[in-house]
Image (cartoon, rainbow, N blue to C red; front, side, top):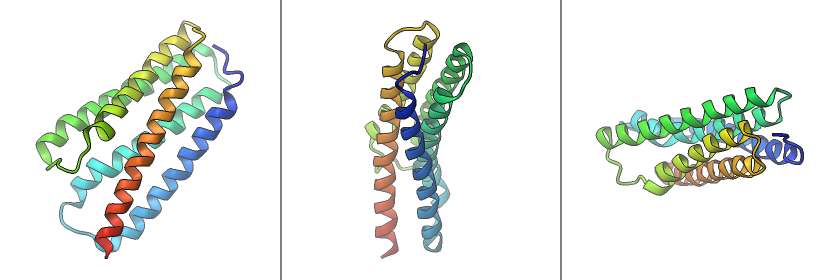
Length: 165
């Protein structure tokens, strides 16, 4: 499926994700002086998924605007979607056993990312079949991941700011 008309959208979404990845690293660096016990578990539960989601958005954007064949694009995006699904489901299952997930909002940390990665896998299949709605589904998946990661980043940043006081 041709990406005509969608290149600017995916470039903008990818650039946004790239900038926000950098900002997350700044926030983590600024928080380094306030280290407390169990930070490793919190990082795995809250920070790493945000970085994975932003990175997925960036990779999707790169794959959609790259001058590669449509079958390679479809397979690559399908791999990103399936890998993301596996990551989020594994995170959801292991986090329940390892950590107190009282602060974990199920919809924002599990359900929305699962929906976004499922949409991305669906979009990859639609791109492979050259369906006219493939670009729309891929864009929706990217936006859902981006909005979810931005919201979760904000919550983590607020938590870090409160901890520093």
